[in-house]
Length: 121
Figure 1 (cartoon, rainbow, N blue to C red):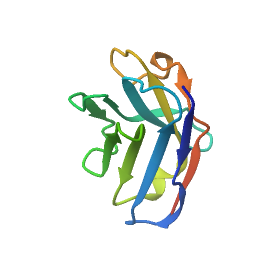
Figure 2: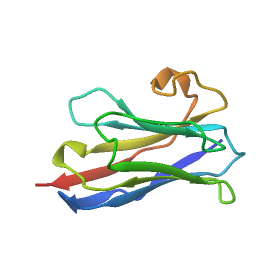
Figure 3: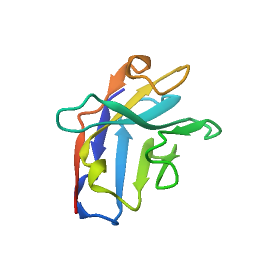
Figure 4: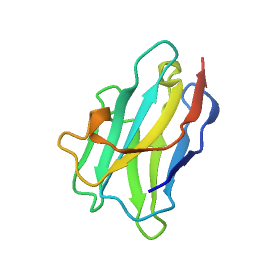
């Protein structure tokens, strides 16, 4: 499993970005997104399973972010709308065959390299 995150950039508050997480290896059941802002610990953003019938979002992004996946291309997306300056962070995708809550870093064995998202006010 090799994860490659992309799609970050600089956007004004209220704008949108779509992050991609491409898995160059086999399909892994659970994929999550986490983020780490400067000076803060990494935090959970969203996760979903292979079938799409399990999804969860951090309260801070509910209603604004949407996670989806294209299993044909082995890619998971994070559509981020109505972005706020506090969404500024390095965003990481992570994957594992099985998770319990899906919201904890330790549940994921595979990690991508991160992509920077900067939201200006």
